[in-house]
Image (cartoon, rainbow, N blue to C red; front, side, top):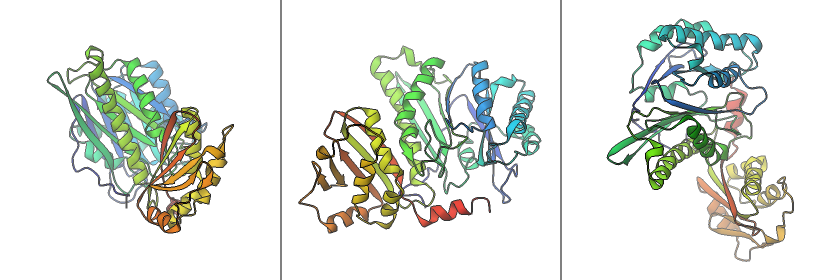
Length: 407
């Protein structure tokens, strides 16, 4: 079960966005939706970030190409159960055929359709199962289908992950709703497995892309479950403009508020992935502070978050803080002065200026390790920069889930 996470029971529609989901039986044999279509109103802005994995999936390549060639993106099509990755030219053809069928059914340009896939890597996508359901999918489009869509994009997730927020500007209400999926093969290095966020404010394309790039840094690019970057990672941000609120017409304070609304949504979705990480029993926050710069701090935080020995100690609730020292010390950074480092587990001081804390006891460490939510704080005393990473523990269940993934 997710760590201290309860899925929302309702999501707000976003003006200019309609969704539809159905069961295309792409992989799952039980009765569950696994195919989703998102319709975006004309003249909307759409921004995206994608995996940096060199073996990126066919739909990722198609998405990048279509975004470069088309300013008016109108449809996103998402299938679960098959990643269409490692599938060569046949996989590219499958992705394009799906886009072509949606374009034909909706009377839009081929390049205005973006495909997304998640699931097993290395198996050809049965594209015909999708193509033959497109007409029905289009007929089911409705603004109130966010909940069903959030469930349809799941794979090893145990729960849907989605959020809605609102904010008022000069008497007009802006709504933002987002959904994501991901539980394993998570260290995005760009975004996450799959995430879709829509807002009904008007934001110019270039500005929207800049906002998304910055939002990713403090959200989806600050999480790790197992240090593995998926072949299919994709995050899309859509701005329809149908609320009547225009970003560049707001004063500076309101512009910051609207941008923070996007940042907060992305961060909440990213943290939901960690709370529902495969086999997770702990939600772990790693704060590195007083660092020379942000990149330096983040390298150390990730070094701790990626360590199998740290993660298994977390699962065992074992206050073996020597593993934390090891993980900090192996970080690929220069000029790390361990004589200045202080380290806390929750409120318990473990290390002070490179020396074991006199106030520490095993009992205090055990109290912190028994918690479901654990904070590890590392002060380098070498600057003013800081970084935060969220991660999970590594349990027997994680191994079982991934050993039986294709069963």
